[in-house]
Length: 346
Image (cartoon, rainbow, N blue to C red):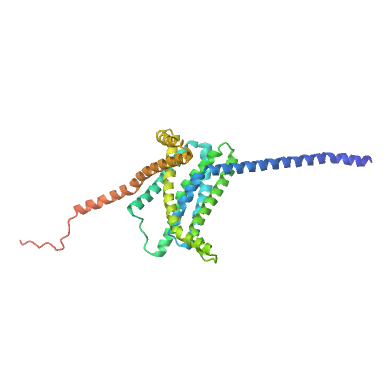
């Protein structure tokens, strides 16, 4: 009996230790669940804060696949989406985390540089629309397809880089109070979530005409009518989206420049826009929308002004410099007469 009692008492510390271990595991699981909830909530909060730029990104991208063969639209969108995710995870995310940790003052100038590029892209497209000039096309159809796809993807990924950088910086500002590793996890979630959302919507938009064709072949009359209407409407929808994308580049670029100038201490331009915005926000019912509209319009004006200057510097000044030597050479060289001079008699 005494031996049995001794064995029972020997097992008591082990049982208490196991119970304590299980309590620790349960507490850790609760903490992990709470942390996951916090990370999810923070990721949702950060994503919501960047909604405006996400909408702009969604509006900008479809215009890049306009004019491509239907069977190449989704592969090109996939290439752009892959480049976008690579930008976010391999370049933007490490850069902004390191800068926010060690050189936070550099974030604003870098964003302004990106805003200037966006304004340049938008102003260049406006100039092409107004002047009717377009980039030179390649000679053969096969070369045109290869060059166009590569240039489309490259141009779209460059533009997406700027928009993605602003999205990630906005998200970073929203979770700035979190620890480093929490920020890292949250921003990875935001990067993946927003990329899937944006390019899922873009893929849906660019294939909407194919969906319409499929519906037009169904047996139900109203479904056929809806499908035909969808097919007929998509060219106009794509034109509108393309136009909105150009305007979006201008207003996002201009807004980045306005906000960046304010953050760097030049408050004048931002204060003027804020004053105009505040003047209409008191209108009952539509004050919020009018305020957003005024801010957007002013940002677009800043974008077209700054972008126009960059277009002038990038395109017209170099062209003029190249033209001047040719003009000088043409005026100094004598025109050939086509006949040899007659020899003089001595």
